[in-house]
Image (tube, rainbow, N blue to C red):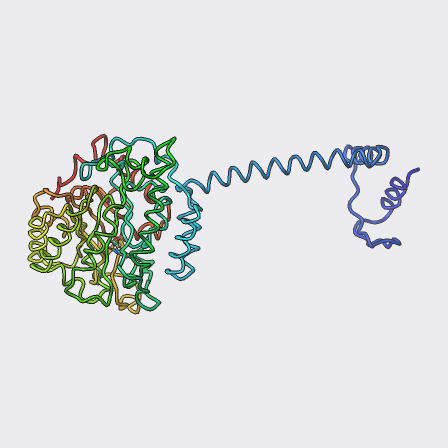
Length: 470
Ligand SMILES: Cc1cc2nc3c(=O)[nH]c(=O)nc-3n(C[C@H](O)[C@H](O)[C@H](O)COP(=O)(O)O)c2cc1C
């Protein structure tokens, strides 16, 4: 009799639940199997006792290892494919709420780092043609009219990750001539009840030089990559006529560069914008003169009347002196302007021959009925997200009417759904931009908005509804 069966018989003679003392260990006797189970146990025990342990052990262990490895590989691939898709539900329902446990500015900086390293999901169908969304802006075909608004990628570090999320336009900046740290922290505040945000970053920027160098390096990388068989810069650029080139380096997608002003520059000076045109003109599909930042003292005053016309004329004239590529020039305005002020802006823009207007930046107002704590509501800064939407839409409709549809308008302010985007299109926006909605609902927002727009258009094209409700 083998040692195994002897031990089993001895154990079977004990009462269930009784603790046995053996020389090696204390063992509690389990209920013994009966009938088929007993026969099976017996045969398994006999099998184990008779088959040489090394051969059986090696075979089973190898099979188990194989299953575990295959499981891990399949699991990792499936998990990565899931996480790689910006539509994965884990982003709005798990990742974004978890990130909201941390400081808003730290989360912003962390997401930029991830984007720099390419560790962000993608709109997996971003390259499939979407005829309903395709549109034209300043003579160039754009795959879709959805843009990332300025302020997220202030230093041009995450451009390709943002195109990967499916945006047709990505706007970097605002960029100031000299580097500056912006306002002291804390300077970004969430209003989760409203999915809104108050910020007073105050143009924290790495400055023209550092950002320009980054954009120049990226431009050449793209120019070379887009010209197979070419590995030198001059021929790569020369092969495509300058006005047909997408300065974004991604056909069908536009790169906007938003120009800001240093806090300590003279309030009336246009110099910072003029320098911005010189530094970034060659690199942009469109340039933005941002005169609507609520966090830089005196800046919003530059939106007023004669001052704005002078400023716009200067930057347009500077743009016209650029050699080769001359990007469209767009002015970005606040949603807090009266009808009279909007009239002046519309007239100044047409007179100075700017190429478009972005309506709008954040608001300094605190519309009634907000649910955030009064401490947060009293924070100084610009409010963004849904509470700004009505103000932006109203301003957009007015500007569209005043400019008579002569120049493209870009709508921005609280857009978080396809219905919102279409409301802006019908009010006169040829394209729209988002920021705050993505900071709440995550990287799938651009894809979701595009899908919703296509569905709501019911076979029409985006461009055919622009200005329909203005
Ligand atoms: C944190 C933050 C920083 C911003 N920084 C800038 C900026 O540097 N330049 C600019 O023109 N707009 C800036 N904006 C304004 C946005 O581009 C956009 O006009 C505004 O937020 C309204 O859109 P939204 O409601 O979709 O966010 C910023 C907005 C936020 C929330």
